[in-house]
Image (tube, rainbow, N blue to C red; front, side):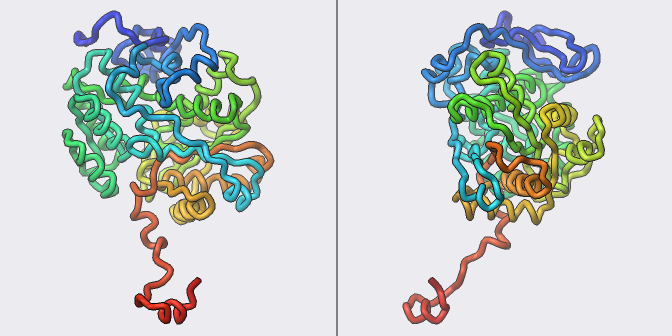
Length: 415
């Protein structure tokens, strides 16, 4: 890895630590432990961080730059400036489900309309500091959009690989940015395997979720930071998070634990719940069976953004759910569509299929008595419904078609 400059400015990040054996490595483009092949994550020396420091920062994720593995001047480099998306008080949805206090963290407001803008912004900042010249990824769609856009904004090349059967909206939205864009005959796990092989040959390509994955994954922490800040510097009692690779859920939990350790929020119990589609629910299956190992599956679901059959962080999702007293549940495709409709009808938020998975899982957890209806709850809407129109096209139809006359309106019995 001779292209890596030294020393590097990655803010408070100090080292890479193996999540399995604890082996430590210098900061660089590593993602697997050389001793046990376990995944690496970032270790920090945060120093003093105050609420006022954060609140005085920019209105995006860089207000938390002192908690991320990014250069100290990251906000001054052209980037998509994601984050600080709205936290919506969802009283009508809560009432329909029998909950007392419910919030939707609506990440559809990010630049490419999903939470992936967060992780890509952090990955890009770290990758440039580490000397990479091309931003790349394998993707189920949202990440492809975010990488292509972020590279275009930063003025560097992008290389994106996706399954050929991806939703048309996500294919178009990736292609429009003009980078290298390759569709692959296979599912996401096939695409990811190919990307790992290419990463071994292209040393100046930063595959955000492969060779710079430890930095990329930290971007999801900003969801947890924002939720706490937007709640008035407190943690929710319960949170429901969609699970694809599982990284988003584990990093939100990491964010909560960091905020507690830094004294920025009160140390109080919280429960973390994971949401999967039944057509790709290996983590939910392992949780229900009481297993520690997640058995890979072949995805078959309309929730393509969650269709990762061999989730890298699956075992760690199980750890978080069990440690916090939460659970991991799955729902059918029909329930996913109902979840999308329910959120749209009650709160005016049109979610993509992953959001439908979360809402349907929330309803299932409440009905089963697994989730406390009296506890303050947050759910994650990770993307915009305009990206997955096919999922709801059969049920989202006009009420009527009439001639342009008042008589026709009356005869149709409308209004």
